[in-house]
Length: 219
Image (cartoon, rainbow, N blue to C red; front, side, top):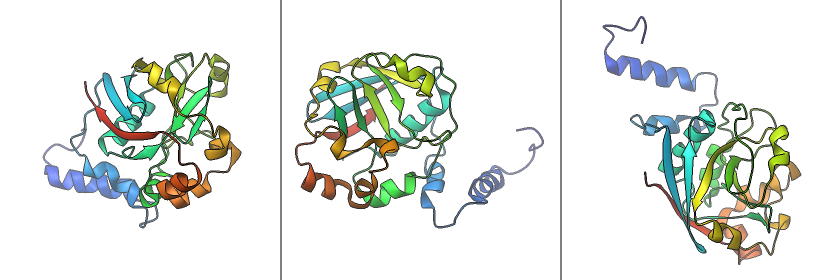
């Protein structure tokens, strides 16, 4: 780094961590998650396998499509954030959404860890994967798979960072009987029970939702 020659590496690391935490509530433990993965490297292209109750879904992630989105997805996967969560908003023939952790404590820590918006480069056609969001600069952890051509969303700021390359049949088969009722979408403002109750709430109220068992980088 310019101007850092001769400074011990440990001091640089401490300085970076202190700077990253500056100006934030010291109780926001999620803001320090990156420090737990100091050697995390995001490849330009990588694959993630979602093992679900309907079978595996493999997503090819392209950092060049959406660098911030690809980096955050990699961070969430390698942190095991998605493990034992639910596909809580599935609308048949439209989209399948996931990304609220099953443990409310974990979901709460990541809820305010926003990433910058990426400029659109790819279209939201069938199979593409993008972050859901409500406000500009508001992407955190919620992700959806387009089950149809949703290119009308391109002008609304939804930016694909990857695409399903295996297991689209599994994505199509995810249980959609609850539709918007079980998730409501960020913009509908009805997700607080999911954050407060996690898997316990969803399993009680919407017991047939499909599960995201594990998410792992495979390539």
